[in-house]
Image (cartoon, rainbow over all chains, first blue to last red; front, side, top):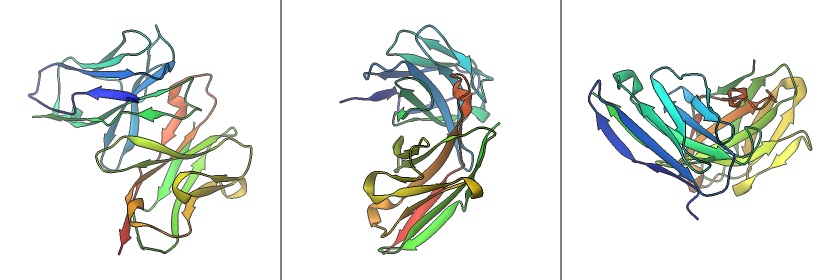
Length: 113
Length: 116
């Protein structure tokens, strides 16, 4: 019963480095999302994929790219990390859209020095 | 556009006391409303969801919330707090934006502290 699996759980980067956060779900969900969580800010949507083959920008997409590799996997890439991208990142999925229950991964804590 | 306001970034109650976490929303169309809970070092889990079927919504772990359109509120309550309820709680509102996930907005969260 894995649900939504994110890797890695922790990562430290230097400014300018790149990395990819991986996310996979085993619930046959159509929609997947990437959020970032910052203290006192709640969750803010970075990118989402309503269905396999589609991706769209959310509230805070600058500095990020995504790939919906297949129905199961949705990755988030930081091409040139900046200290402002220090945050906790959550991947989520739902069967069909935002009006249904979202299932969240356990998060990736990213620090950019 | 929709928005959510959670009153109180921190709420402290004694074990066994009533829990009340406040959420007010704004939306130009009938909304869907959610409460999510986040335990330390975990992702969010859905507590309950309002979809216009009934104004009083019962969720998991003894929580419930009442939709009050006249007050644009969706406050979360639990009659008797337990130590295991200590967590971060998020209210969220979504509108039918044609499938766009930017139609879902989370509040900033309320940290619930349970005093023994």
